[in-house]
Image (cartoon, rainbow, N blue to C red; front, side, top):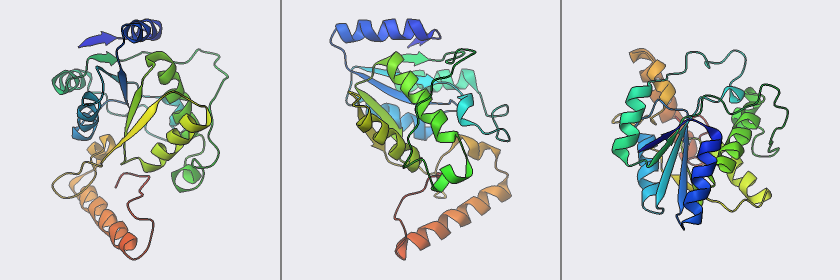
Length: 221
């Protein structure tokens, strides 16, 4: 596994691989890897020659009172898991934004409502960082988990509207034995919190079965 931290080096490597006829898949993450992330890598490996996983805790998608500073960053464990899963290139930049960055990418339909209504600016941060990653990694495929369903909708619309030469793959949700979707933030939950999350998940499933929006959770529960 090749470790790259420089954005320019990542772009040069990607262009070199493309010139050599290699197909590239991008698996964007914020680290704190779990089986859900690793399932994305396995899916990518079946379709491409090169699997680039990015690890970058993106500050622009966190609100002022959210958990950017305490977001889990188990670097050594992430490297081990990525290597064992078959990642060929691990792109872990220290920074992706210029100090005076003033250019943004924004989707204005799917990013409204649902999570977007409660996290203003969140999806603008998501689309901007994903576009930056697309420019640096030059992927043929981008692999995202269905756990973040609204994020998938937003990225698919961005790819379509901007005519990006990228195919997007949605990977199925991976759940633990109790049925809760795997999530990096679930590490925060106490045993009591896990029980509450499971009850909420069960309630949403019952509501969906009664005619709600089937299987579409933007919060990964």
